[in-house]
Image 1 (cartoon, rainbow, N blue to C red):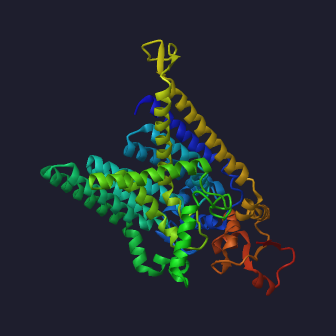
Image 2: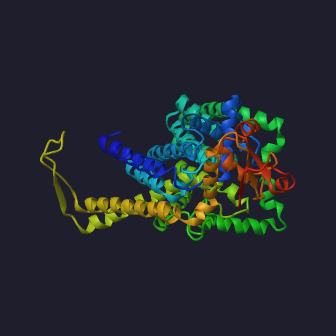
Length: 522
C-alpha cells in the first residue's frame, strides 16, 4: 500500500470513528427497551458466567453480539454507551472491510476509498452503528466473509478459504437475516466455476477446479464447525429456529403473492423514493440513501447489471465481481421482502449495506472516468504544483493534466459536501427530533436516575403501564429502567428494594406509606 493510499484510508477510518463515536452518549437520546434487554442479558451473563449461544427473551436473539456487549459493560458499566460502543466498533470494522473488499475486486484504491467514505458518513449505516442492535454485526461478518472468499478465489491460499468459512460461520450467530447468505455465496462460486473453463486450457482447468473444490471444502468445513453450537441449540430448542418469523411472513396472509409484490416494490423503493417510517431506523419516510448517493447507487447498479449480462453474452459466463455484488444485494433483501411487517424495513436490510455502498462507489468512479475523458478531450492544458518543500521529491514541480486535477478536486468537494449533509441529517435533523427521543424512551432515563439516587433501604415500586411483549411477566418497556438500575434479576431487585409491577398488580395490593412509586408511561 502506497503512502497516499494509506493516508486516505486512515482519514476515512478517522471519519468513520468520528461519525460513530461523537456524542454517542446522547445521540440517539434515551435507551430503547430492545437495547436494554440485550444489556440485561449481558449483565446476567457477567454475573453467572453463562454466556449463551442464544438468548430466548424478546422473541429470541443470537448471542454473539450480546456477549460482546457484556465485555463492554464489564469496562464501561451499565450505561447506554457500553451497549452502543460495540455497534460503533463493528461499524468502523465494516467500513474497513468495504475498503479492502472493493480494493480487491476492482483493483482500484480510489474506487475503494469512495465506497468506504460513502459508508463511513452514510446516515443508514451510521444510524445502526450507534444503536445496540445485533443486526449491525451481520453486515460486518458478510463483508469480511466475502473479502476472504474473493481472496481465496484469487490466491487459492488455504488460510484465505479458512477465514472465509470462519466469518460466514460466525454470521449465523449475528442476525436471522444472515441465513440467506449461503445462497449468495453459492451464486458467486458458481460464477467463478463457469469462468474457469473459459479462462484455462484443459489441464490448467482441471488444476484450478481441484484447487477451488479443495478451498470450498475447507471453507464449508470451518463454517460448519463455527455454526455447530447454534445448530445444537436449535436442535434442542426447535421453536427458537423460526421464532416469530412465521407470524410475520408474507405466506401467513390471505394474498401472499400480492403482498410479496408490494413488499418487493417497497423494499426496492426505499433506496430512492420512500423509506422506513420508523423513527428509530430512519428519518421517517425519507429514502434511506441521501439523494446524491441514491443516484450514484442507481448508476452503479444499472452498470453492474449491464456488465453482468454483457459478460455472460460475450464470454459465456457472468463476471465474479458483478455476480457477488448482485447476489449479495438481491439475496440479502429477501428477509425484508418476505416480511411485510413494517415494510420497507431499514434494519432488516442492513445486511446489504456494504454491497450498496460499493455499488454506489463504483457508480461514482465510472462517472469520474467518463468526466475525465470528456474534459481531457477538450482541455489539454496542464497544472504544475510546486513540490520543493515535500520530502522525497526529486524535482521542483509536479505536473498533471488540468482535467484530472479539476475532476479530483470536484470529487473531493462532492464527497465532503455529502458527508456534511448526511452528518447534519443524522445529528441535527434526526438526533434532535422529539419523535426520536420518544421512540428511544428518553423520558425513562430520569426515572432510572431517581431510583438510583433513592436510599437502598427505601421501598421502590415501578408500575409498568405500557403493554407489549412480556418478559418474566412484566412488559418489555421496563427493560430500560431495569438495565440502568441493574435490577433485571430478582436478587438485585431485592437487594435494592426495587420491584416491578403491572398496573393490575399494583391496584390489587396495599403498599407501605412512604414507598417511592414511579410509573412508566408509554
